Amino acid sequence: MSRNKIAVIGGGQIGTIIALMATQKELGDITIIDLPDFIDPVKGKALDIDHLRPHINSDVMISVSSDYADIAGSDVVIVTAGVPRRPNMSREDLLFINIDIIKGVAEQIKIHCPNAFVIVATNPVDTMSYVFHKVSGFAKQQVAGLSGALDTGRFQSFIAEATGLSVKDVSCMVIGGHGPTMVPLVSTASVAGISITDLLSSEQIEQIVARTKEAGSEIVQLLGNGSAFISSAGSIMEMVEAFLGDKKRVISCSALCQGEYGVEDYFLGVPVVIGAGGVEKILEASLDTSEHESLSTTASAVIASANKSGL
Ligand code: APR
Image (cartoon, rainbow, N blue to C red; front, side):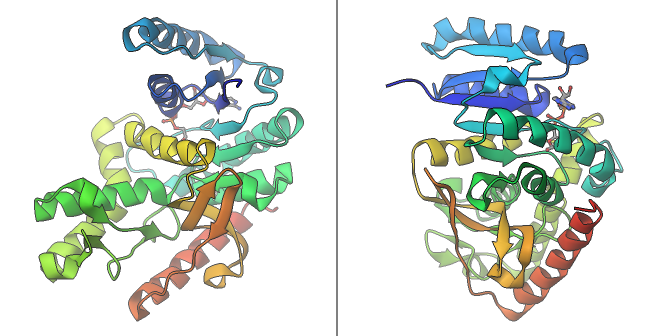
């Protein structure tokens, strides 16, 4: 059996950690694409990962290029190319610069990896996934944006911390746009099946919900020169493993909705089944009244952003 081929577009903070994690897990051979002017540091980091392999018994190959022909036939392509946030910037502030980058990337992936499953991480991710889909013409099953997987992990971590219980037993989901209007679903959040409303006060839950929505900004403020990258890469790896292993995992991702949650032909963070078919299905959860209202607010924000792309 031949090895999986994993392409990473953009060898910056997230791209490097993805390459590291994929090497640790021996998920497949990895090719990182970056711009010629920025390629040397990427090559340096890739060599560093290459030299880690003997210490962790990993036999995957890692290479770096500026030529998209080198990712031909990749099973999965992860798009991290773009500019990250700095303090006091919203993800929306990245819109126009990253739209141009994603348009160029989509053209190349369309030529060289027409059958790949593509995970878009570039922000604002709901719009970037939309732009990627429009420009590439890829089927809706082939494109998923990194949003809820990351936001859900933050929600899970905060619930585990507040309850003092294992993060492994926390089950919850964040849906909606990957920004301040996201919707952490309290009505279905639980620890080992016990509702968080039985374990935490309403004030504690409100604080957790608010912190989840601002968790990305909290990290941006602390880092000072970039945005979250370790948990981002980890969330992407969950999506990659679900796809390569045909795991049928239910992961919140930005996916093309065609009527689901009342959204027609836009990308929004929703619970998705990821397996060998990519985005195999969107699951529709029943929401309580306030969650329903919040979802309509977040959908409006995501649609307004996508419409700025002019596509
Ligand atoms: N083609 C290929 N690579 C590109 C291109 C392009 N057209 N434009 C930029 N890049 C590369 C940069 O050279 C850099 O190496 O993308 C990489 C981006 O890395 P970082 O600046 O470190 O950003 P990172 O933290 O990895 O985040 C990437 O994901 O979560 C989002 O908001 C985040 O939009 C940002 C993206």
